[in-house]
Length: 493
Image (tube, rainbow, N blue to C red; front, side):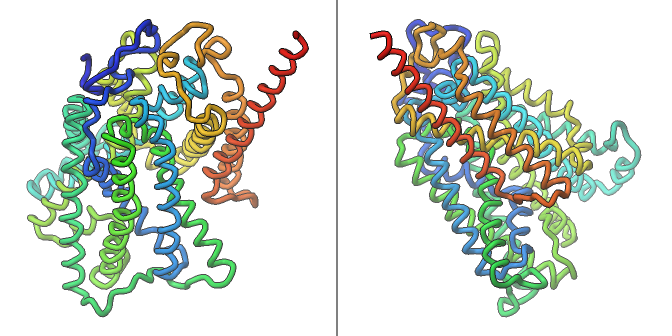
């Protein structure tokens, strides 16, 4: 085995080296070691982060009452749960990662397009999350060594000397763990998600001890909306949750391929998504509501909260916890996918470990500290790349469920033979590319119009619009192609 990503690869007779290596090969049954708890812990690692905390807290500032937000959360997270099960099924059934699943619809070479889009999103956010974690490292260093505060001034390419030390420390520390392979990653995230709960519960209890249970309120907005506006805000909140999980709604298969069974996958998803997301959100709003009374303003950054408490021990424990939490989400959402996606570009030379190393290097070249300081850069990136995630999902799902009817010839996924099921036209499925281009153009256009103040603003519905448009266009194209082929055959007879 070359890298440790796929512990028990299934050999494919006659597999082309341009499409096959041990990490992209189907995982054998004995290599599927992820049970319910590991999948549950994976979702805890994804949700229990500084970004996840801020996101959950922000939902309570949308102009809705507490119970209205909770209803929106239930609707949104149940939709995510259903969609995750759909995207995870082919990977769990056949043991294949996202780039190989994409070959079913886009073709053995066209899948590189789907992989590159998802890979770019992962690389950029990997750098951003590493930078966020490095800020917690910096807080920890200054707390334990106050004289280091002098190193927070000046610097190079936008980072102070201490900022560079913190960032490179996090970068290297993550790399050592991540490159150990998927089994080590499983064990690490089994630890990450639960440990954050310990600190979050402790933080919530401390807040309640300061404010009192009777003063607790889930209402954080100044003026709740009413009437039709309320229904609209609730729908937007639900869609915001779906969009938040948009990236993993493509590559969840990278983890589902290791699930012991489809039932284990569904149970792990249920515990980790609806149940875990709601519990974490409630704890988040308890803490955020407490900061209003304790500190005089709502603080949605948990690192800043523990820093304000002022106790060096609390600051140290809190900082370390959120460093671990950020590493957890970086594994789940931002590292594994581009590692596979890059390996898919050149399987002969690039395995999972080398793909991960390339991901790490590119994440530094992005200069994420400059990226997050530029609203224009974030807007442009999300508008162009984020808006295509929905269309990719719609195309892949329409093909697998509506066109292929869940029937897959696994050996052909690794074949460059012109007679292979997924060779299509020189390795590309034109129907999938056309559907992606048409719906992607729509999604990106709507995202840009909304981001730059146009009267046309679909808010958080871009993912759903793009996914539905891609599915409809692709199904229509496949129906037309099939009819045309049948007509030509009839004429030939």
